[in-house]
Image (cartoon, rainbow, N blue to C red; front, side, top):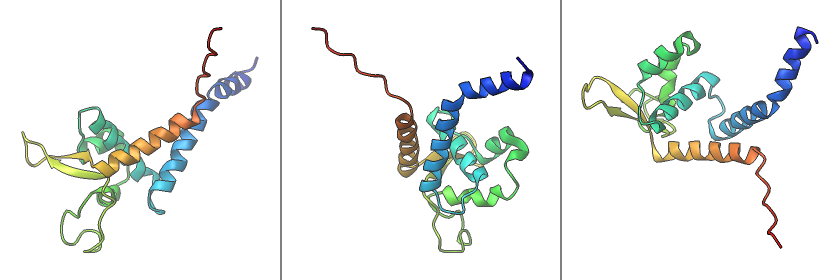
Length: 146
């Protein structure tokens, strides 16, 4: 068996994972505004994962963990996920964010702001997880013993 065919066989074994990933992208595309970038959605999912694990992240900690994968303009565009503008000039003065995340002061260092999911953000994650659960084959119910 050649190296190429072994790799192809390995990929075939992962079709289910690829299907799940595709499903997640479709759901996110349906829930997010049309011009939301993959980098922005990655940022949101990382912030959500950190918050749900009980260790909320900051913008800087996410950017540091991901490195150059998150582009420089994300520093301004991630605000689209916030529940309210940070300053009067944000979001073209009047436009509100999606309300999926909010910033919470670190009680130990008020200069640091944790990114936390709002109720709406939790709903978005719940919809995403439901879609992923629906994409997976459900175990068949055993027939009752006679």
